[in-house]
Image (cartoon, rainbow, N blue to C red; front, side, top):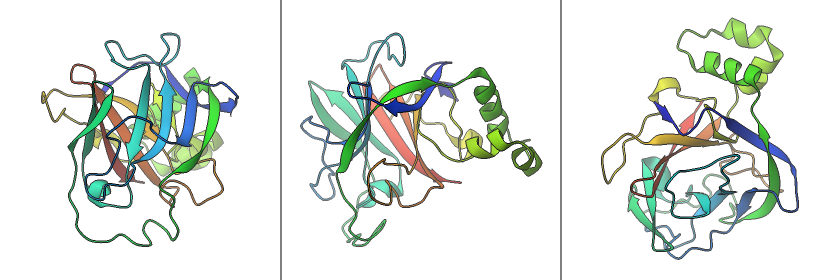
Length: 224
């Protein structure tokens, strides 16, 4: 697997002008499901900063982490690219049926925006996450280490190596150039709004990759 950087960041303290927004609306044209024509759910939006999370050659000052649980997009690989200030969906699973009541009743397409600072992933935490991702890691390590137990759940992380529910299966090739993409983020269920979360399941994780050459973002969900 290829990772964007060695330094990662968790969600930090609530902030009036922080670089991370959970929820909210992607304002870019084209951020719509090709299955339903409805807005894609923005799970997070991150302001890029060379001192924190940076994507060399990225054509925008932000990266929007978009997804859909209310159509077939969640059933397979999902990719979109930034093109002249627009979002263009370039890979998705098609669906014609209804997903009423999924992932839970009264599911909101738009989650209330909540703004946060970033908190650096400490060296000790990163070492624990690397061990948790190893195929040799056993449950004894998790049960005997309270911090490992905490980190063994999907969480929001940007950059670095996040905890990966499916271990070494988290690899993705760009749908356009076919080169291996860089893993950039993990998004968990926590929406920080008054609802059941992005998926309604705390064990579900959406992983995001990027291809700076093609300006492509890809996503796929996994369950621990």
